[in-house]
Picture (cartoon, rainbow, N blue to C red):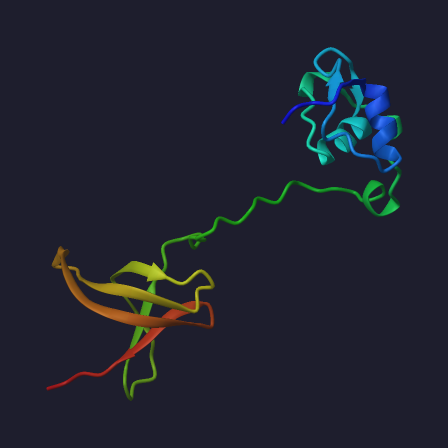
Length: 153
């Protein structure tokens, strides 16, 4: 795109504030002139790249906001990962149909949905932990993964 001429930064800012376009103009001095943060943002909103080293920040230019400024901030809270892992290795609790007691069993977590509503475990034979056992789909109930199993004879 051909340019229609050169303008200074001050002229470009005045035109933008007046609602005029600077699309076909070349702004001179962008690589050497320090700009206030607000002016750099105005230029950036209209597609002008301002070198970050030329942007000047002044706390006096920042508006006072009591909802933000009057808050006593505590320690930062870490962001949750996209696929949250339980803080500790989940334990699978099994109960045989008709029984009342839930018992922890050796199992390896294969998959859990992000909200921990369901999880898939592989039962582990303590005598041969490297051998894969049967899969069990468990529900998150009362802070535990639980699954009922039936025994066939």
